[in-house]
Amino acid sequence: MNISSSDAIIQISGLDSAEFLQGQITNDVNLASSDQMLRSAICNVKGRVLAVFKILKIGADFHIFLNKSIAEKFRFHLEKYSVFYKTKIEFINKSSKNIEIISESDFRLRCIEEGFVDINESISEFFTPHELNYQNLGLINFEKGCFTGQEVIARMHYRGKLMFGLAKYRIGAENFLCERDYVYNKDNKRIGQIVSKEKDTGLIALKDVSLISESLFKEDLEKIEFLSIESK
Image: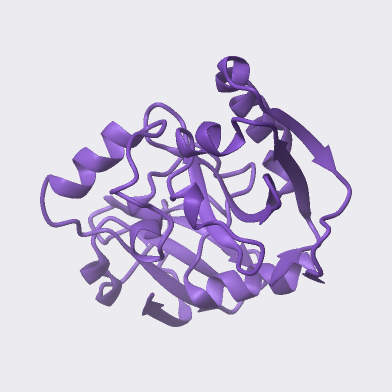
């Protein structure tokens, strides 16, 4: 089990903690254990991903590990819904479990290699789970019942074939593309957006994964010269 050195830890405790979390997160909280981290997301009412995180169940409590840049926003979001539950939400310094902590850069590179978008403040509430491929990475449980944003996400999931896809790329210059930069086709139409970047590699969320075979451009129709690009 590993986390990033940039992660904050939030403890959810109290009699109603499991019931409370079940109504908020995209995964099934009953799958959380002390031996294996459960990955999940939390969305706003419009079905946009506010945060993504790992969960450990420690006794009757839950430890949540997430990027510190959105940790306060995440806690504020939960506190809006916690008033009717016997639960406590607080930051803690460390977990009681033995967890490997790796550098933020190495963690981001591992996520990119896996095709996993780790949410930070620059992309929080900008993308749906399907645009980030979370449904294929086990972060969404469509059998668990309602959660915030579930109606929008389920409608998108069942309305027909989804064409979204992620592409991992490498470029020659480290600062050539930034998170939330759009990519365009030759007709200057937006076809994707940068969702993760670290050094010379990153992930693009494409509206249609088949577009990976086309030439891609910046907004000014400057062609993006990739060293490599592949679907994830």
